[in-house]
Length: 529
Image (cartoon, rainbow, N blue to C red; front, side, top):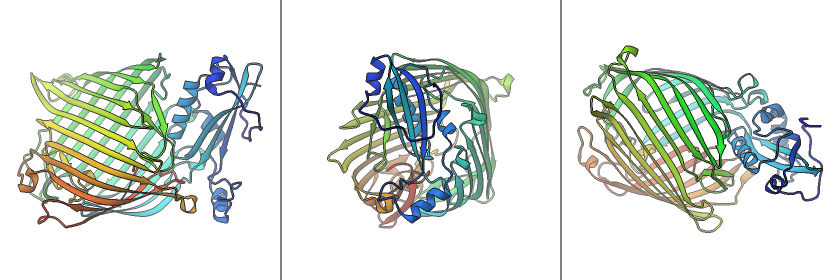
C-alpha cells in the first residue's frame, strides 16, 4: 500500500539495485519506512552502557512525521537519485540529527520500498561556557532545546557577557510551522547597552525543485558601537538600526542541473546615531533611511560532494562545488521615507574547482553598495579562497585567503582584525580600518580517538598573516603586516545538537612583540575546524 509510514526496522533483503540503477529502470516508489533511532545504538557493544541507556530514556525521539515532512519524494513517484541525494543532504542539515541513511529495502514488479533511517543527537543543552580570544574573556550561561518534544522546534534562553556588552536572550525556531514548509525564527535580547530583536516568517526555496517562496522579516538593534585602536576602545557612539523586508519569489525548479530563482519585494533600512558621553565620539555617520522595491536573481548549480574530515571530524560534510550566484538591485524613493534616492545593489558568487576528495579550491566573492547622484557610496568588495589538500587518511593541509575593501563606508573603520576576527596571536580588534587582508596556513590532523563515543579529537599547527588599515588614527602597528604561529587542539562534540568544534589554541605573535603579550590563549567553540 502506497504512502504508509512505518516506524519499524526494514526487513533484511538480498543486495538491491542502487538508486541510480532503479532510476534507469523506471522504478516507482512504494512504501516509505521512516525509522528515527535513539541517540545511542545499544546493539553496539561499544555503546551498550548504562549511561547511554539512560540518555536514550531521557531523550524524546524525533517524531516520524517531522522527518516525513522534509522528504522531497513521495509514494507513486518515479525514483530520482538526484532528489534522494538532496533529501539526505537537507536532512543532515538538521542539528538534531546525528546520522541519516536512505536505502531501498524491497524491489519487485517495478516498485521499490525505501527506508529513511535517522539517528538523533542529544538536543537538551544546558551549560556554562567560557571563551578567550584576543586577550578578552566571554562567558555564557544557557539552556537550549533543539528538538522540543521531538517536534524539531528549537527554543533557547541564555545569559552572556563579553568585552562589548552583557545581556539575556530568548529565541524560537520552527522550520515546520503548522506542519507546513513555512519557517519561523524569532529572538529578543535585553543588553546592558540597549536591546536587539528579530523576526522572520517565510516559506523559503527549501529545495532546488521548490517553485515559489515568500516571506517577511524585521530586525531592530539599539546598541553602542565602539571604535578600537590596538585592541583598546578609543571612542563609541549610540546606533539605532531598523530593517524590514517583504518578498515573493518563483522558480522553474531544477532544469538540467541548474535552478534559477526570481524574487521581488520591498525593503527598508534605517540608521540613526547619537553621541555617547562615556567616551569621546568620532565624527558620527549621517542618519540614513533607504526604502524601496528590489528584484533578486539567484542561480544554483546542483553539484555537491560528500566527504569526511575537512571542517568536522569523523562526520559527513557536503561541499557546494557548483557555481552559485545572487544578484539584487533596488531603488530607494523619498516618497517611501528614504533620505536619498539611489540605486542599491549587491552581487555574490562562488565556485569550487577540483575535487574535495583530492585537492579542491573554493572561491567566492561579493560586491555591494549604492549609487547616489553618480557617486558610489558604502562600496564593499570582498573575496575569499580556500584550498584543501588531504595527504593520507588523517592529515590535511589547508590554506585560506580573505580580503575586504570599503570605499566611502557609512560607518568609520568598519573592518577589524585580531583575536577571533583573525590574527590569533594579537588582541581582539587590534587593527581596524577600511581595508583588510588575512592569509592562514594550517596543517590539520584528524585522529580515530573517539573517547566515550562522545567526542572526536584533532589538532592543528597554523600561521596567520594579516593587516587591517586605512583607518583614522592609525599607529605604527596599524601600518604593517602582522603575523603569528601557533598550535591548537580540536575537540568535536559529535553526539549533541550543538555539533561544535572546541578550539584550544596557543598563538605566538612574530612582530609588534613589544606592544602585545608574547602568547595569546584562545578558547572558544566554532561550527568548523
